[in-house]
Structure formats: C-alpha cells, structure tokens
Image (cartoon, rainbow, N blue to C red; front, top):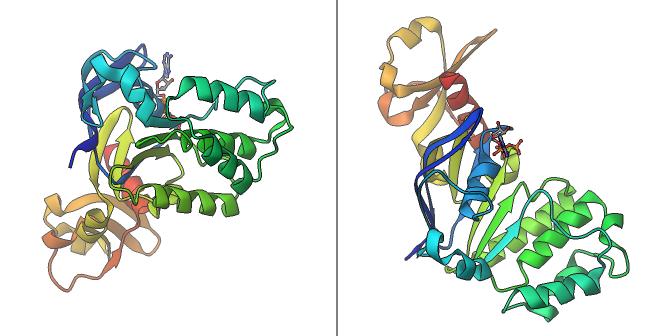
Length: 281
Ligand SMILES: Nc1ncnc2c1ncn2[C@@H]1O[C@H](COP(=O)(O)OP(=O)(O)OP(=O)(O)O)[C@@H](O)[C@H]1O
C-alpha cells in the first residue's frame, strides 16, 4: 500500500524558527494527528506540504507522487481545510459552488448540497455573515465534495461545538473506511485528536519527536507512581519524563524497561505529549 504522505529531511527556515529535518509518514487509509503547542511548526509543515510556501530542503511525496514536480496534479486529490477558509466575504452558496465547479475536475455538486444540508448551512447568507463554526463546516464540506483521496486539515475542528465535532469525527471515520483515503489533521487540542487518530506525530519547536501508531504508543508507555528513592533504582533509559507533586513522583516509563510488579497506570496521548515536552525543555 502506498503511503499517503512521505516527508524526509524537511527543512524550512524563518528568521527565528527552523523546521528541523522533519520526517513524517502517513500510511494510506489512516488518520494521522499532528500534535504540537502554539508555534510548534504545524502550519509551517502543512504549508510546505501543500506548496503554499517554499521549503529549504527535503523531499515530499504525496499519494506516491513527487510534490516538487507533480503538485498541480496532486492538488485535485487533496481536500484542504486551513484555519482561514479563504472564501471571499461576499460569496453565497451559489458563488462557492460555481467557483469550485471550475476549480476541481471532480467537483460533486450533489454531494456538496448534501453536506450543506447535513451541516445546516444557509444558502442565502454571505460568507462574512457565517459564524466561525459555520465557516469551518463550509471548509470541510468543500474539502469532502471533490472526491479527494487525502484530507489535510489544519486546526479544522477549532470553533466547532461538541455536537458538530462529533458528527465531523464520524464523517472523517467514514471517509477513511476506503483504504485509498487518508487524513492529516493538526491541532494543539490533543483531546480532539486522541480518539480520532490511528497515528500520532508530536512536533515541538520545529522538531518531530515521534511518529507512531497510537495503540502501540499506548501499549508501550505508562505512568509509574513512585518515590524519589524508588526512582533511583530505575534504569534511566526507561524514563521519558517526570512530574513531581505533593504525593510523590509521576514518571513516564517504557513498560518493558521497568521491574515487574511496579505500580503503573495507563497513559493518555495528552499526558504522553506533555511529559515528553517537559523532559526536553
Ligand atoms: N512568514 C513567516 N515569517 C517568519 N516567521 C514565521 C512565518 N510564519 C510562521 N513563522 C514562525 O514559525 C513558527 C511556527 O509557526 P506555525 O504557524 O507553523 O506554528 P503552529 O504550530 O501552526 O502554531 P499554532 O498552533 O499557534 O497555529 C512561529 O514561531 C512563527 O512565528
């Protein structure tokens, strides 16, 4: 099976920021959550992927094709939702539909209409009169209506209420049931991605810390509730992060590297991210 995205050695330099030799893989048919704090480099990575900004170094393959030479063609197969949806303020439904018809070979008017209904989006309002949530839903409806094989969603679930968020999550699951369909979704709200993703990638200060199957991570790591004394006896390579509190020490550990019988509790993706970042800073 072809990987939906393969990024190798990606470098993007700004004056005060560097996306530092990023490797990232999204296997076909999967959902990858790109998790990072504000300013970690998520949007920069996505913009390089989509050719919105020029990279300094590295190679990018999308749906098995070289993004440097075939991007114009590949774009037909990518549904994109960015933080700013990018539709002119004065546009209503009919204008959006007309423009998209001219933009995408595979624009599916009927499907677009069905998403308008599903998301309860008004046909008579101008885009500038939409609420933030409505704007995001419009972006998602467009991204889903041109038979894309890959969805790239940058902070796309921000501003959605819990009910719509849940609906959108179901739509994303449905989309990736077809194993030719994949999703890259970024957020700094880890709980948004925790349920949804098959793979997670942590990005911190321009560096990708890991790119791994979610279930493998949750099996591999755990939180040990311990004391400073006990901690001294642990193999340092087992420890990936620590937090001291009133009632002892919490340590992020690799399950296979700690003594049997040690009291462990499962870790969430959110905790994993926070522990790993604290360890580095
Ligand atoms: N055009 C630019 N010129 C200079 N620096 C930039 C430019 N665009 C982004 N940056 C810097 O790159 C860094 C990463 O920004 P980026 O938008 O990729 O972060 P992010 O992870 O998407 O954050 P957020 O969650 O806040 O959206 C920041 O320090 C930002 O100031």
